[in-house]
Image 1: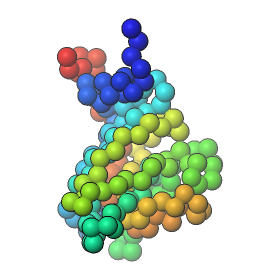
Image 2: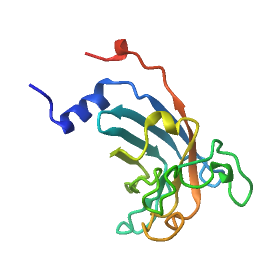
Image 3: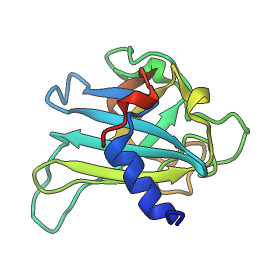
Image 4: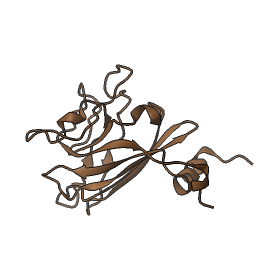
Length: 174
């Protein structure tokens, strides 16, 4: 019996090592922000699993914070005083598409009131090997999915460089 796609994706997340990952660190303004973004190749594209801690918390309770989340074309998380992750570059966009159809456009992250966000999405806008060495950015505002060129997502508050992991069939847990 063949597994349905959802169950197959769940098995991938539970039992497979990711092909690539980005360790996310916050800017100097958000030094406690940290987390991991994992990339799992699957038949239909790439599963992207984001797990972030200590995102900025806002009050009152009804003002949940939503964060922009993108793959950028740059290869470094360095920057300057005005933009601590300036070298992360613009959105990853190998097809030259308008926003929000960039290869690196991802759904927003919804944080809990404790500053935790966890998300899994399936994307066929890139292959995992094509994004190696590029950056993942967390922004302080949600993407509006309209504004050009990048969705008016605000300040870059977290960044990580996508790196290859060591994968092997023997890494599968039974």
